[in-house]
Length: 45
Picture 1 (cartoon, helix red, strand yellow):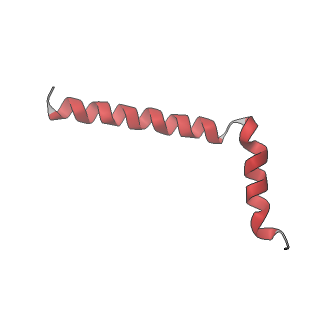
Picture 2 (cartoon, one colour):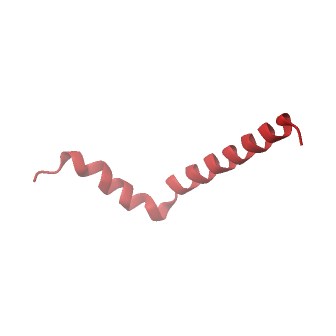
């Protein structure tokens, strides 16, 4: 295995992790938590 193969593998793994984060962030089960977090700066103490 040379350095170019290692770079290719790392690139593919990083892309898969990125797609996983995007899917997690846009999933419906997390929507209510994210909406609540978005309202935090506007809430009064």
